Image (cartoon, rainbow, N blue to C red; front, side):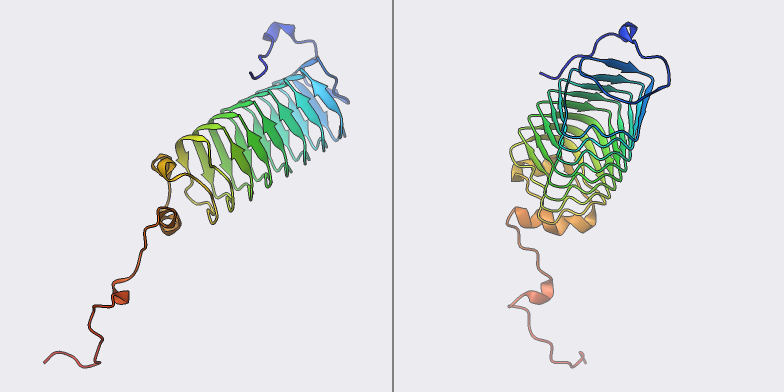
Amino acid sequence: MPHQPRSNDACRTPARKLIESIRSGELYCEAKFSRIDVSQQHFEEVEFEQSCLESVTARKTKWSRQTFLNVEIDNCDWVTARIERGAIDNTRFVRCRLTGLEIIESQLRDCRLQDCKLDLAAIHDTKWRSCRLSRCDLKAADFQACNLREITFRECDLRNVRLLGNRLQKIDLRGSRVDGLQVEIESLRHLTIDPTQVMYFASLTGVKICDLQDDEDRPASTGRGYS
């Protein structure tokens, strides 16, 4: 189960104070973290509310039972970090490097990801609700046993993304690259696609789409017009 946040009256961090470190078990309200490096650390039950993380490096960091509520995460490097049993609500990721990120048994709701690298991510047993990803690179990301509902991928790179074995509902892929995307045939009815993607998804069903000119029974043109 995702971690449940404490009530707002538990805030201990002064408003808009610049914080230079992160500690397990702390609740940070209206705090700002800028240009700090917490790579390879393990944090448990950290809660961020109405806060901003800017240029925070957290490579190979493990986050357990953490909460992000109304948080701005800008230009952060979380390559190969791991999030377990987290709750991420109404949070925006902008220009973040999240290659190889693991999100396990967590929940994301009303989140926005813009211009982020999320390639090779492993997202398992996680619920996504009402999220929008714009101009994000998700090449070869692996979703397993996830519940994805009302998710928009706009102008994203979804090549070789694995969506097999997930519950999908109201997934909008318009404007994204979908070559090699893996999804069950029965899940196609839950996708909204654009005309340029029709050929690829039709190929997944085994349907062969040919021009009438390829019909072997059609008489060959003699090059002469009708009299």
